[in-house]
Length: 486
Image (cartoon, rainbow, N blue to C red; front, side, top):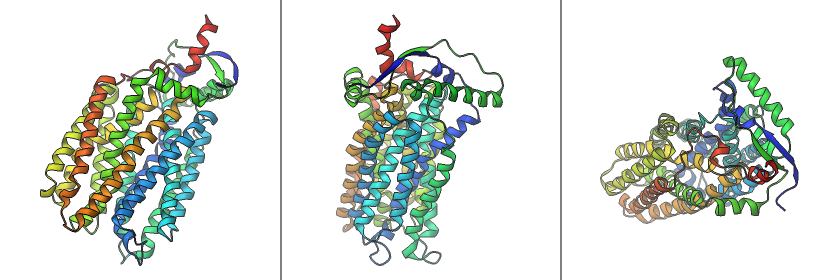
């Protein structure tokens, strides 16, 4: 069955949401939902910065460089599986219910990480932490796109995804005192770092409870009265902030409501109705996943192993600041210059620069490697963030969360699991010779994948700037409803 039908309605809810000017309500959405990327950045950076602390058999867990890479791969694997599992639940049960559940999963799992006693406990906790974060990606991206007006959707999505690097910088700076044995005992420093992530998550949960369910999801699933009530409340709050509201476009849509949409129908939609968009999303996700998970998961290990850096936190903080600056400063151009130009340009430019860094690797110091990385990822961070934007807006609403989850999972599994494992192995093999050029092959692979992603965007990219979600990809239920309307 494709779902239980509950009736046919005509609604102007999407047009009313899209015509709203920016207000405090939209900031609530950004803070309540977008801050999850800060948690992800915190998690990834803590692991990267704490490689030496985790390797110590007395105060850490006695891990090797290979184990550090394995932990990164397990975290990503958990994120992929969590995205698929929670993603299909998000489309079936609603955005709000799932973005509360996935945050709770993350919080419990990161606390469990702080209490790790063995490597296998640590691996299991990292898997569950990743599952919570992966579920967040699906629930949050779909909710944000459905609540943010079309005029601002591109810049908001890119900037929010780039906020990963606020967490990355914060995590890097936090590890400096926490890994200083004169301030905090070496046995407890790395454990406290993971505990701080749980504290931040609780604060986010308090704000998130005030974010409403997506009205778009409600009217599709036969709960149009609830959706109408939420939209009227949002309109009242926005009007109280900015005054009279502009008239909504006459873009009412007729849809046949269903309580559920079957997985086979979703799969048919993705691969039969939108094959080019599917290829595009896979290419973008694989490129950015390999680049980031390979380079960043092992960046701290590379600095300490080959370049004799004792406190990697300062270097990672600079690198992270550049990434966030790129996403923040370039994000408005995705709405003005357009998606295709910006995504293709950022992917190709960052790929070319990474290849140059690979050729120069043997001549780089810790400082010059960080400068190179900061320039490369200033552009790459905006492009990588736009991969999530693309997957979240180019498929029908009923499939949005699962499509985000699917392409995130497949792309990240291909690039994000193989990347840390490859780099971890390259670092181990090159350690004896103290020759950092041994990891250059990883740079070249990442560069090639990013350039290919940019070229594919030129040919298959979707010009979605300033368009409503329903015009970019008509809801499946709207197509079903057309004969009835006629």
